[in-house]
Image 1 (cartoon, rainbow, N blue to C red):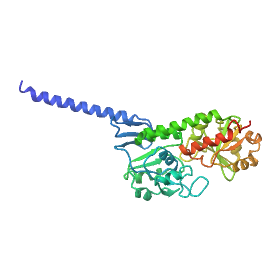
Image 2: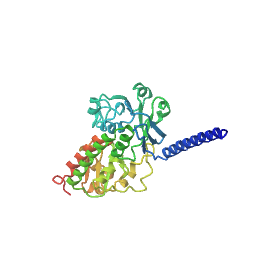
Image 3: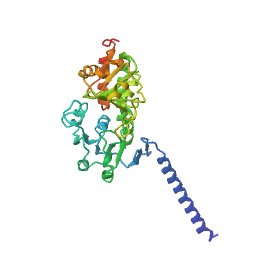
Image 4: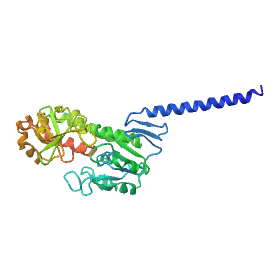
Length: 342
């Protein structure tokens, strides 16, 4: 009996060890099965993990110094009150950007919170590192993506790579809120917007459907046409708009990292892409309506022939809580029951 005790002890220890390994393997397996953008939280709140296009990212604690390299994502981060200390910027003093290169719709908010502009247009690794981040956020696609700096920055701080080309800003707010521990802030801001969206839907009379929504080039040679997958397309559909189909002959020239939200139509293919009975011009002021309708190549399109071309504001290229709210106001003005005539 005495001789059996050590054997039993070793057996028990082996059993416990195997059980521990199995539990660890199960947890690892569960985490590895996360979809891109899916967040898994510890019961205590932290750590929490998210699957990204670059693999699994785990944050041990809530970030307190976030650097966003994407001017598109920065608006949503500000809306959920994330601790954003610095952000990439775009070209300053334009119709869409203020003095520091921040988007006009949230430039004042960024200034009030002391957000520092890192650089304008071209990502700068040195500026990002100097901001001393404990989390770096990079957009997976788009003209403001700093993905090429990933390898340079991955040892400086955890990096969250997230795409915005296949999500609404509300979906982004939900994902960011979950991984950053700002769930309630994200919920509050999205509920506020959804209430405004429902109110807008009840207030407007739609122009002739379907609708082609686009960013019309300043030189008139073409446009970036929003798809049903775009943030702009998603909001319009929630309001009851039908997004016009884009012919297959036009598709294929989708750029900026294989984005799902736009189709680029230029040259002789441009008129073929404008299939809607109405056109909404994003990132455009009222004067662009006239320029579009006077484009010789577009005169035979249904929207031009029937005078159904509408600009919906300069700040609607990159949608976040602030610009999406402004978009609703623009649509109320354009298509409110008292102002719109079919």
